[in-house]
Image (tube, rainbow, N blue to C red):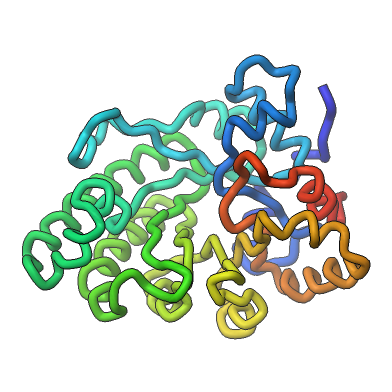
Length: 305
């Protein structure tokens, strides 16, 4: 099998960046890697399991892995604590030197899944008490799962909650701070107490709540989408000494970016973004069918050791 870059310093590289110390190079990672992408890249593999995903990660020279939860099918309610799992978790934490993130879905995501968008958006006005109760149930579940994950050796938690769209928050900031932020804060507190690094993910434009995320102890954010007005240089200038920034490459732009004449200048811009640590290179969305993997490889060759 093709060998990728050394993984000896992978987890350390990510941790240094999160701690705003300067690693040997900017670490790289993807939030999601669709199995279909791995099958396209590694056609010799008949199935996609732990070994195949690890081989793909090596080929891209990634330094971290994110493991998404698996829930029981056909449920219209929160799963019981023991019904949630993360595929191959023990292998990722025990057999690789990657920095391991586990993903937990947040209050907004669970609300969309169980209540539906309209009901969730109207609930703060229709029945604040019902939303508070639901928030406590999500918090209780995720605090329990955080304890499980800490015992299984993960390094960090990504609290994933798509609370925004391209123009701003799905709800007004005050509603977010009243209902959603306290729920998230208690989960972050549990992660920190367990020694895990807390990150936050949302699509869209959520810049106005970054100070709130910092205040509750979030150490990094994923998805800094320029198409939603999340300009990474501006965010670095304002919060780059406190937050680790991750995921600003737009998948649809990879081909144009990798073939531009001033690619060297683009690489130089990474020196600024990664100065003082605090940067993880990655796409805004993760890797799905149609993503230009060859162009991504070219961009990911930046200062390989």
